Length: 450
Image 1: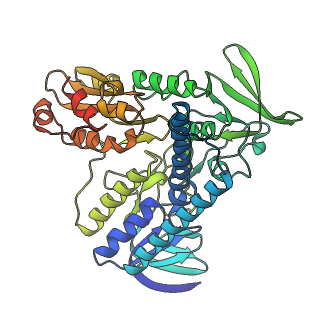
Image 2: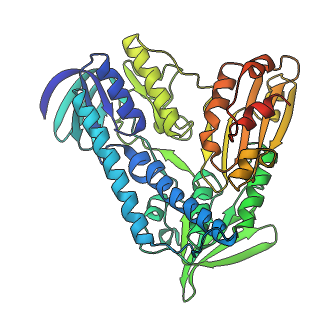
Image 3: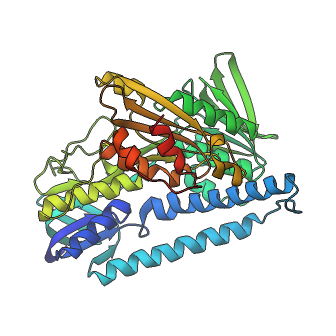
């Protein structure tokens, strides 16, 4: 193998966490080498967040057109070209990828295309060349979990559902988590008949039940069918398409469809770590780190999905910021106790902080407050009054503990909620805060002051 020069930092994986770490390090004057086996931007840019949200945006536009047509405001049928939507999605991803690569290049980051392998002694091998670094960050990301059932090869994953040859007339989704719900919602807008199968007994079981109930009701209103407490047993190819057999409370049930999406979660990708590196893993296969993102081997860090925790792009951004701050001794540390989480359905779901149940476990006396969007003038002006805002606060101190929103565009409202939770806002802070009127964001202040 050929030896290469010593870098200050080597990063394995150019997804959100890896690319952000490389950029931050380069801005602080470090020499950086960045390895990526596929495309810059990782799953988020190429096969996750961005292409999915492009499709979701198109689906939302279609729903608005149909609503305005029903109301007599437009004289159109809401017909669409799925092929044109796909072209637009691919073009948007390509533009963003080129922009990311241009940014890395302008900062002097050395980009290496290929499968990198972490070796003992803080070295990385890629393409027969060994690179040495003072510090190494592993940001290899995650991949879809695959069900081990007969006929599993007949199912598709989230990547496949981003670019199918055609819209399936009937779609069955296994898993009612974030990914499953988003694809169920967007394909319902593309006129698929959608069934969602979930092993748990409720939607978003770890979030606020009152908010999850509203989301479920609104999705059912759009024609999405849910089967809870059901486990997938097998998939078969028949004359009637793909038939999924599930075992639920009532016994076995078969569901015929044209596509079956397996969306039961994601798992860390850690095959870039060779034996003898001294890296410890948890039971789910994620790399164990401390709160500075340090792995168990000296000079080795891990950020993003590879840690197996909160698998969100903005969580990976925060991880990268923390790791680079530890390496360089520069930079503020993000508050990882107030990471917002969003589900881009129609209507959407967004949350941050603690549920009343979690708050009670931590010794608070939680108070739950609610404001429906139908109470807002802007919701009526926007012709969409679906959903509500819920706020959780502590009865004694009045401190904000959490927010849960269901409604159109709530993912654009959650940042101010995250700020309030992060800064321990109390009633007095909300009283001095002025919200623009008329806006949908007024609902946050209104709810906090109830």
